[in-house]
Length: 378
Image 1: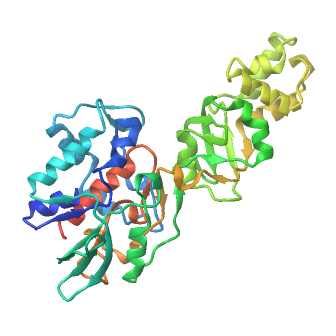
Image 2 (image 1 turned 180 degrees about the vertical axis):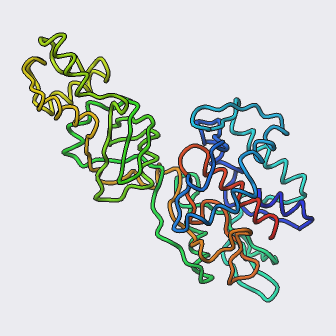
Image 3 (image 1 turned 60 degrees about the vertical axis):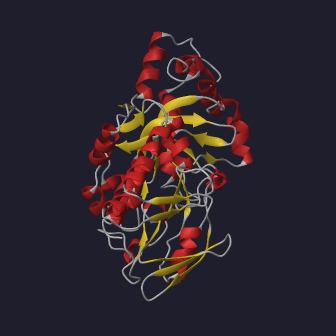
């Protein structure tokens, strides 16, 4: 995105990529259909130590701007849920769009090319490549190397190391949009639930998400968990409502009145998967009939269903994390151009910056918006 914009300004542009294939992370995104933006993209959907930093870029290049580009290339798309837009066909269509934009702007792309060193010169920068020691001079240098998530796709900390090399601060980085795991004792109890999915509300502190949640062999996953993982820290509890739109106490009390001989697990299985209903009943020691359960006990069961407190022991880490939280400190950057204020000609864009979006196309929109802004200036 950045290279195409700079090329349209008649800049001489070279893109260096250590991967052997262009846009591999785009290719695997959205189940292969690429959730390329979100209709609701707004500053409140992003995490950063400076929540205001992303406002300028998101306003200057909006989701509608990228949608217009997608439509210009005749790419069919659909809204899945919550403003998330996906290609009807393949994510490769978005890669092909970007490569076509690059070509139209006469920008050059070199794959399987690794940068060994970067030095500042009077007129810009001097890059030395790993293979053969070739050197390249440039006036502007844009770092769009992403974070540490999914290392098997080629993710590295190159951008952070280069930032620190030029005296640019980097905030704490950690895996985000990532499944959470439990310690062995909790896992042994929950393992029978692996593969079960429910529509839940998952809360951590003041932040909550109402989306699907999935029990796994290692812990919890699904959109609600991936979302909350960006806010969760080691030692924090999660509060989970398995039936967030239901007053479970009232429902169970009515069921007791209507059929007191019914057991709790059977009553709950009308609303929850059977294995999950059984676990709740077992956890509460409710082995008898509904008629045996007092109002006090029903309220306790209701709390177990809709205020279930669990403490993950950690996350699955960068191996499966969709993004990296944190990054190049926005205090060092100009929010309109993404330029480093203290190092003329140096820019950081996309995931390498301390701006992290929610699940659902927000991080792609940040890539397009920040890339577009840098492309107007670099």
